[in-house]
Image (spheres, rainbow, N blue to C red):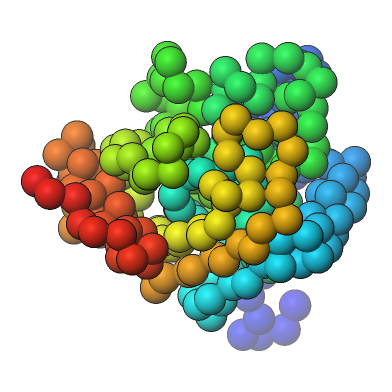
Length: 250
């Protein structure tokens, strides 16, 4: 080493966060990481999804320039259909595929091993339990955003609409980003309710339009229940604006 050169940083081996977990527990773990098999599944699945959305639903993305090229970030949208997560995640950069995690209802997608395996290996989804949501889970998701960093696809309504109307946003989105610089990317997906409502067994060939708005950041919002409520309200207002929906009357 010559004068003026800095010593090379010591290389440290970091084992996978989910190392040693049984298969069924690994599927449901918020610490799950993509190995070689997972990466191959992601590449194959999302290639098929992009073709399907383009050919069957003629997906159009407005505001594509607002999609981040690097993590961390959270994509949020109205929730009308099981098509929603596909339409939001598919346009994101391929290089983020292993670090882009849709947040899925644990009681729907992670109760049975075959469905959980599909959600984990194809969608790369992470579970959040709606009926008994542990605050520690939200804290772990919040920490992973910045530590990895990674990105999430989240639907703050909590469940798909049964009427086509957009419901109020829950404050979980605030618990993830309040008092941070992590950008929230508001989106509005049009046509998903007509294409694949909750009561339908199969999707119909209806056009989908994804409108992507500029990022929102909440460094001044308190990381408490009041701050979370404020974040949820501001994100909801922007999603409504993108969809041309009237603001919520307080």
